[in-house]
Image (cartoon, rainbow, N blue to C red; front, side):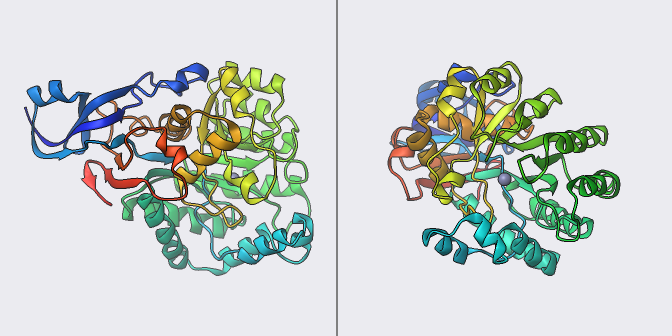
Amino acid sequence: MKVDLIVKRCAELHTLKGPERARKGEEMKDTAVVKDGALVVDDGIVIDTGPTNEIMNGYEGDKVIDASDKTVIPGFVDPHTHLAFAGSREDELVKKIEGKTYMQILEEGGGILRTVRQTREASKDEIKVEMKRRMDVMLQYGTTTAEAKSGYGLDLETEVKCLEAINEMDKEHPMKLVPTYMGAHSLPPEFDDQSDYIDYCCESAMPVIAKKELAKFCDVFCEKGVFTSGESRRLLIKAAELGFGLKVHADEIENIGCSTMASELGAISCEHLVKTSDEDIKELAKKEVVGILLPGTPFMLMEDEYSPARKMINEGMAVALATDLNPNCWTESMQMIITLACLQMKMLPEEALCASTKNAAMAIDRDDVGSLEKGNCADFLILDIPNIMHLPYHFGINLVEEVYVNGVKVQ
Ligand SMILES: [Zn+2]
């Protein structure tokens, strides 16, 4: 059979083939690897995978790439980013290094509301220019699909502007984006009551965003001092009525019962999960919810406590990894996140790979990416490493040699 492309003699071809759901617990170690493997692509789609000798007997490629001594994996999926923002806050890192607390930085006019000001002032085109620079780097570092949250506008006008920017960049850039509305990211300066602002999100903002079909998911920062579990529940119930999938920022600083509340409402993912208790982990493991862990965040905050990933996996939870790309944790590199996940949270290289591809795709409801299943998009990476153990081990550099999206080389 004649096909567009064959990638042959991959030292390791990690296909992540398997069930049409996130891998849970023990299953995360199985990346469905083929040694001396080959990948067959036609018309932008994965046609087959298998041992090179078998594949070369059955197919004839227009183009054949020899990937000897290389590892081939699905493109990374980054399921939690705050990609649409203006400006930067590098001076705040210096203040943190000098010993200032987050509260002191907030009092000096820094933090999230500074980014809200800058994002409100920027035009849609200016935001798109900044997003493009970030997306170019993400693609270079192997991310082929990412979730992108709004939430630095807070008012409807700016949230719509940012969500439009995300939807337009999804079409204009080879990297794929999945948009999330996160108006409930912080209390905007023009409100002084959280509950009033949740009313505004439910009654004024969300129906408009739903009607314009600008976002697939709705997310809320459920945290002490931000939005309570009750306020978050109210928002999520309304979001579900309007047809949004549900996500929640939960248990990052304190455990106020958000992760179990959200999973009971049918949330597809709970994100951060640093302070999640042993009992909550057991509850989450019973559900289909994916825990999206963000080790870049404690790293940049210079904190010692990371999500209890080992416990989660041992209890049978499905875990994904993400960058949390935002002005407070600015990295485009899933490779950096994988190194942090392995070193700080004791995830195994195979588990971290599963968490960055298959499980990350499931956490944003994309079954066409994240694995090299027959019929999926041919989004894959050729890594200049002979086995997957090098991925966390050889750190701080870019191990990606080539990036393919829909069977086309984009890097
Ligand atoms: Zn976040």
